[in-house]
Length: 188
Image (cartoon, rainbow, N blue to C red; front, top):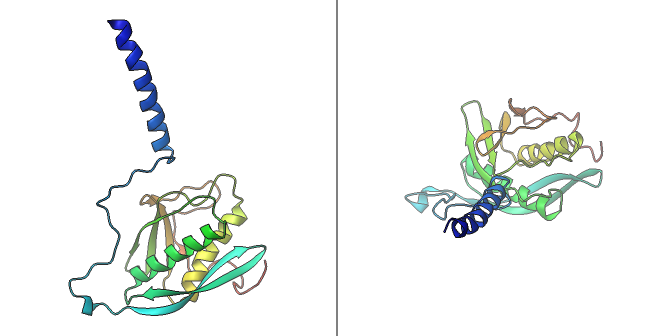
């Protein structure tokens, strides 16, 4: 009887261990079907939404690239940032700049006009050079700045905790002005 018990217990524990490993390393992502991130309002007439032509900037092939798209543009800054960053993330995934699929979890603004941007995973892999990471951040900040969203800085978070990176410091806000001498340069 004990032998049959162990013959069932060992494969079950092995499968549970593999499943735990896959979930903890984000090879398998489990999301609740009841968690929605959408704009809600009691009266649809209270929301003024317009269609705006926006520019998305990213660094590719040793120069700044940009793509113009039309976006829904509400009055509040937080939904503006949500639409803009989601479109920017989709573009850099489409252009194969990111090897990972990154999802924007949430955006929160504080009184000092600083945005806390939380992603579902670290946007940088371990093999990325510091320069590539820096230009990824500069592309996002340039996109936000050039579309007229007035912020002082950005905090980058992963699962609502500060992003941890061995090369760059994300404990403080990154100024939206960026660190390039002139972000209009075609090459660095």
